[in-house]
Image 1 (tube, rainbow, N blue to C red):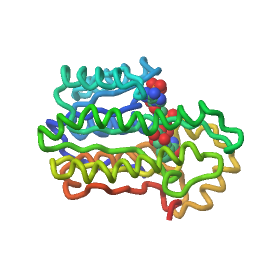
Image 2: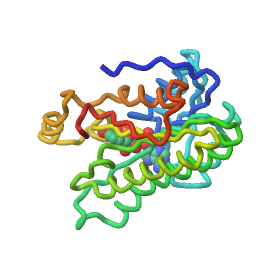
Image 3: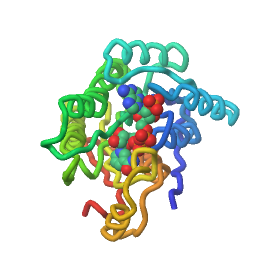
Length: 253
Ligand code: NAP
């Protein structure tokens, strides 16, 4: 379970947003193992990001930890410049940073709506914009957006999150059309329920319900998602763009 794909990403520079924990962390590790130089973005978890960068470097990879709040255009631009300065131009962008603020519509605050749209959707837009020119100039690159089964199917109590994740799918398809002629591929992954801090608070009965509806009978590991991200970053997926790959054990069928 959760086997990692092997791919040759030597010479690639991957920036993973929200890579201090969870899926982003697993993606950064898998991309580094496949040969990419990796920039590990974090907002609050500085120590975790730096420890991860150090351990990847000890394993022979090139890696740096870079701070930025993805909702802030200035910080995102500065982060991309910092990565370019230390590792080279970004050739793979994984828009992974995300948060949830769940609640039924009538109880959702303005902040619950704005913050979720801002991190999950605006963040991906800002980071994509910050790397797009360089990728177009280089006539190559891969942008991978981390959406969710919730963006495809919706979920009571997650209207803000579902809107952001569905928005990411629309953005993925639009950017695939816009950047494809310039050699840049844009795809999304739509994970089901992955065992990370984000889902750690799910009540047991909800987990049981999810498992009952998951043909493969288990939750995802962060490595399950990381494998698909490595695939979408690699030449093995060179004719795939505008796709949304479900990594959900079948729960989204
Ligand atoms: P997680 O364990 O809660 O980690 C979230 C990551 O996002 C952290 O590294 C955090 O960084 C970063 N982050 C949050 N706000 C940020 C901001 N404003 N700027 C930069 N980074 C920020 O989450 P996860 O479960 O790994 O989820 C990763 C992605 O997968 C999210 O987009 C999520 O929506 C999506 N997803 C998750 C699941 C699931 O079941 N877990 C399913 C489908 C999709 P700091 O700690 O440094 O602040």
